[in-house]
Length: 193
Image (cartoon, rainbow, N blue to C red):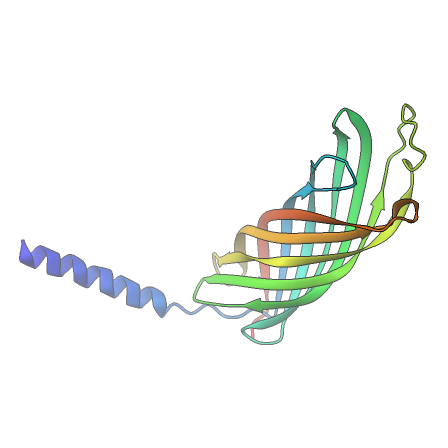
């Protein structure tokens, strides 16, 4: 019995040491293709709703831990709360990403700033004249996620969660939307450092 315990403990320790020594090269570029789900909290008396879409991001890695990210994405909402809003949102965000690379696992945090092009579809049954307009807004995303390298060229992103903020200006009234964006996808790993 004692020899079995020593045997299994040795296997466990050997496996842990081997896993810790696993070395995956740091890519020069990482290109992510992601599905995104955004919980939109419009405020101003409107109830929250869900938006689905996707985005692509590209990260240039200056070294093992620091990179710069460009994030372009879009989402769409057809009907919410019985109203056909047909909202389309296009985001363009840029900023630093800090990576904590450990073998195949790469947790990261990021701070992205940029803008959002927001468009309402036309709803002929609505009496609100603001429907059918488009505007550009300030946007930022603060958050992080995890990439898991499958090999030197491909990784999966099981999650990325961002606190997504936009500052809207409808009818000359400024207000801030505090949203939550979840995404998941695949990451192409190009080149190496």
